[in-house]
Image (cartoon, rainbow, N blue to C red):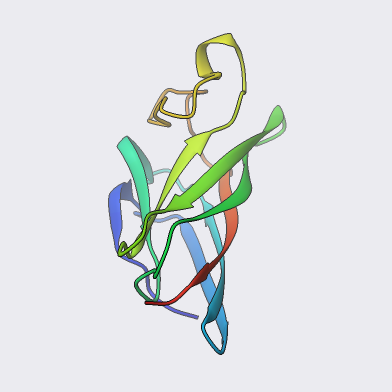
Length: 125
């Protein structure tokens, strides 16, 4: 496990699990955030990675509105970066573009038991 840094995420009383395994120069990261009543998002969601990336990489994940729906997301890391940027992936007409932010009310109003999950494989610098 590791403790990731964040941009535009307040974990509050939510439950966060961040794990990684490194095999030679490749790192596999698995991340889950389950919302609590004081968890919040704002702006572009970024989750810290355990190591800086040598080159860009894409991962996939899912966001869950508890008891309502699941939607696919993309996690992306740029070369020389140490954070994954999380964006929606063609959720609806208003979220069809990769550069649309996930925030407190998009693509749904986040609440207790909702989840953000993703995995990404990248090469370390």
